[in-house]
Image 1 (tube, rainbow, N blue to C red):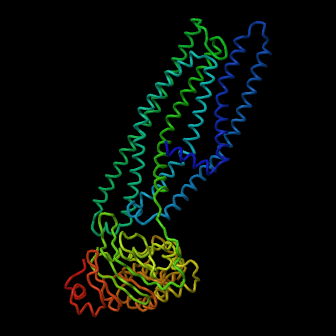
Image 2 (cartoon, one colour):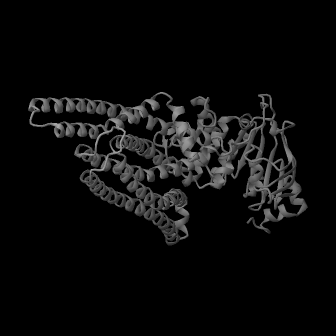
Image 3 (tube, rainbow, N blue to C red):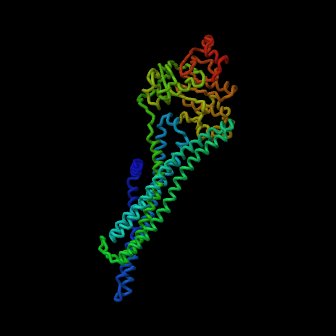
Length: 590
């Protein structure tokens, strides 16, 4: 209920004028649609009260005048329905537009931890399945439920106006319908919520397998993937089947209760007329055919709208389940940025770690007492086995994560003092896993600096040795890339990522296995460009290929989250410690 109230508030905040107009027109049309019962009663009363002295002309005139008024009501209803449809189309799509925009804007503020702990396919499911469930709820279920509810209320008032006795008979049947709806509908609601959950889970699994399809095929895990998919798909099928079976059972049950109620009301009306029971009503009309016959029509209409309420309840439940998942995303805690200072243009880019401890969770630390200093123009290399903490250090400098103890200084100031955006603009990062976006090669390079000119982007590509292969592409720098640059080799994609960092012209460069996907020949060509790119900058290089860090000014050897050795290549080789064993192959990197 809380999500429903919140969603309604959102809707009114988006359309404070059009939405009330739409609701008023829905109520107006629903009220008009109940008019036939009143007019039927009056027409039957004219005929019932006529006698031999009543002329056919008078009867015809009275009936025609009533039919004319009724026709006028229907014309108004038609115009109202057209207006409701036009406004509804705009408000529904507008709501979806704003919700998706709100979700995406919020997603840009979330920390990396959110994406590490939530499957990407499940996040995508909120943009597709959950948004679509809201579309169905807003465009169909809610207007039709409002129509049905209005019709029920108006008809109940007309019923009481005509006959309290027959109204009580009708309400008895409606009580049975509500009891059935509560029992069957309550169970289907739980299944519909589970259906939304497993839909997101299935999409998350499918997205994961598509991204890892090469790994699946290399290790011949097609059968295992099929089994896992079948298990999740079966869970989704089971919950969907239960939900829809119960929802589909509810309609026929309520329809038949309505038919039985129609018969019971007809019998009750006949008995009251034959027995001459005084009618209890607001109108004061006696119990007669002119009251009983319209009442039967109202009973049918009443039961039909109660059925409509129960049937659209399932769509409301699905929509609210989707609403809850969307609000869970929009309510997620954004990335905390308590910094206020700006990293000015005069920044030199020195980085210092002072006794830094860090863990991705509070109870498990992956870095212990890290202390290091990296100065402008200095190349600092981080080496060690997988899981030693090298990449974690690279993630702490741009504040993708914050330390639990100690501090990191940028030009002598704690990086927490700087706005994250300001700090990150001073950093250039090239990761082992490259990400290219749909667009041209030039646009992907310019992503590092949106204000860079075409010439500056080309110069950056030449600097890192990417210009040669780009010139051989079908359309050169205008070649369109899609699917994360799937039409390029891994090394070519990496070169574009390095050029993207170069065009940003940062004070600090972080290269996390940046040349790992480049062959030895290409690496020698790129290294000259990389040396030019690093000149005058503070550089961190993370590498498993130790030959690439021989010229580093400082090499830090890490193990189990600690720095166990530090020095230049020659100094560390002379120590004949862990670095010596790694370099000579006496101890292989795991």
